Length: 225
Image 1 (cartoon, rainbow, N blue to C red):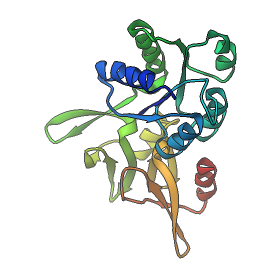
Image 2 (image 1 turned 90 degrees about the vertical axis):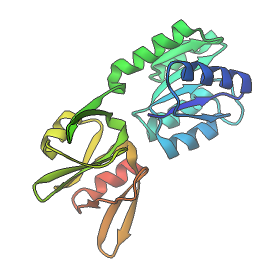
Image 3 (image 1 turned 60 degrees about the vertical axis):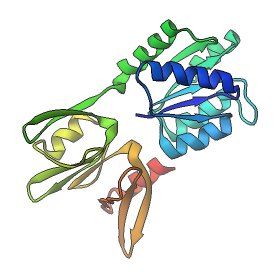
């Protein structure tokens, strides 16, 4: 699960990065202005964006509008030294608004707030003699093959008992059906590969490309816009 910190002040950026690592969050990317933040969101679709407001090139409030369009699932937490932007921030559907210097208590409150909004949704499954659990964000796609459901994920390819219909019903916001035999994690979708008359979904963290049916190609393209 990725976190993006956006700040043009190196010391503030490093301080927040250290605070997140102190609570066990290590998958962190950084950007130094609003434009670079937009580029990072396009590339990684982070789960949480800590966004400064007063920055060169593109202000945080301007970047937030673009981020919400290209990655609506990302939670934005504004992090600034100025309290006069609070009303504007919540108008932009921010999850929280932190004033610098950020205290450990307020950071923990903000993290708890985004975690209460499906941030820590997990999927539990049996693999051999082990009962394992993965964050849904670490799962790339589910594919039905010969009466078995294959889960392509951070652990590799795992055979699970759940049907695609059950998974689709449970994770309606996270998963997208692209054909009768495949569900993909929406946050993993990064492109479409065409080969003759067929189309395949390009996913961020795996080379596997499940096929997209003709009836679903329009829906996939809309998500990519």
